[in-house]
Image (cartoon, rainbow, N blue to C red; front, side, top):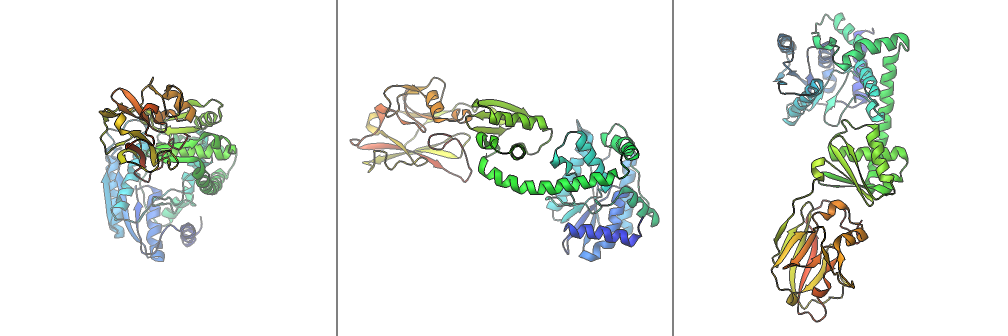
Amino acid sequence: MMAGSMFLDRIAGFVERHGMFRAGQTAGVAVSGGADSVCLLHVLRELAPRWDLRLRVLHLNHNLRGDESRGDCEFVRELADRLGLPLTVREGDFSASTGNLEQAAREARLKFFRERMAAGEVDCVALGHTRSDQAETVLFRFLRGAGTAGLAGIRPVTTDGVVRPLLETDRAEVEDFLRERGIGWREDSSNADPRFARNRIRHRLLPQLIGEWNPGLAETLAQTADWARAEESWWEREVDRLAAGVMVRHGGVVYLRAGAVAGLPLAAGRRVVRRAIEVAKGDLRGVSFAHIGSILELASSPRGHGCALAPGLAVLRSFDWLRFGTPDSMAAGAPYRQPASVPGSLRIPGTNTDVRLELIEKPRTLDGTDCVYNNWMGGLDWQRLSGPLEWRNWQAGDRYRPSGSTGEEKIKTLFQRARVPLWDRRNWPVLLDGPAIVWVRQFGPAAEYEANSGSRWVLAIHDVCVSDEIGIGIERGGV
């Protein structure tokens, strides 16, 4: 064990290398009472003058171990008081938690830390994870089948204000530091409970691998994390660039151009798909190598339609688009039917677009030369309409004779010809004059109702984007 000053200098160097603190900040120090967090608090208290750092102790009492939890809380109170540091305590309640208790406790801690930062009480939160934690995490994720993103392990600094000053320090060094200075800490009995996978890795698997295979395995795994983290940093920028050309987000739904994704090198395609899942779902929890592979197969399939599933996500293929959304977002919208007032508009459900009706006297251009999609959408001869006019969504079996057609056609056939994705069809607007379909979005007016050079009054129909959101499936000629 190196001398205490060298120990502190090494941690200070790690902190500065990663830019963990800015001068004058208030740093929250998460203290559970265990050796790692107690060491962290003492180390930062000694190093604080280097960065003009103010400290506040944060403690979440999980209330999972009865008197032992209460003892931990009291220990932290006394420690903060002895060091003259302010303390914030939050009482946790996990009585209603189901499933993974470890995960629930972790999420509660992170929520607590974020709330303290959002409230302006602290600028960042320091956690006591060590290189030993890093080794356990990398091994745990490897055993679960993680890719390089998972093998990047615990990050020294996160975008949400969490920093980890001890991440290059072994647990043994932490305990030696505390013993040399006569500093006590609390032992958490749950850390020895073999029901938790991480404890089995810490107390059984990792010691066996170190003893029988590689005495320096902890450092090797930490280096693997560092290597993977650098790779991921480069890939983050590259995926941003690739996604800009193939991915579109509209509300809570993400779309990928199937052909473009299928044409990427496999490594890039996998990462773009991962990004789409993360954006649509909010996380990558439960998403496996097999899920990514099935979505890439869907993208490269010669068939223009299909479906792939991942935890909390459904991916649909229609023509050259993949649609990523939660199962709820895939549900068909409720049919709509409403009067069409003139002037007036219809907000197409599930989009950021209005279809607007406007009555025009003797319009200058009726031959279509000035028609621009998303602006002029075709005109109806007002005097041929008997009313009342009504909007509704397209229904299976709908047919009409579009302008320029020699006979009636099914609107479904028009969709297929224009390559309109399945999910855009369900809310597709149709304008009725009594029982007759007189206009269909993108396909224009019915031939027998179309305005011409002799029309005195024309009902003009426009598509108008009413926000900056980006949608797909509404380009001229389909997608």
